[in-house]
Amino acid sequence: MRGDVELDAIGLLCPLPVLKARKRLKSMAPGEVLCVLASDPAAVVDIPHFCAEAGHELLATEAREAAMAYFIRHG
Image (tube, rainbow, N blue to C red; front, side):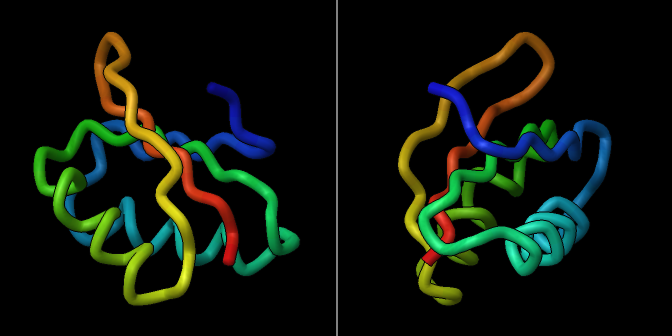
C-alpha cells in the first residue's frame, strides 16, 4: 500500500509520532492517505486511538524493516 504523503517518525517516542501525524494531516485534503513510519512500540496503540478520536480512518498497518507503517485516510 502507498500513501499520498509519507511521514518518517522512526526513532521518535510517544507522543511525537501522533503529534507529527496530527500536524501533517491538518495540511492534507480529506480522503488523502498519510503513511506514518514509526518504530515506537506504543504507536501500535496510540495511532489507532488517535484515528478513532480524530475521525480519521486507519486503513492498514504493515511491517517494514525498522518500523511499522500506518496508513491513515484523512477524515
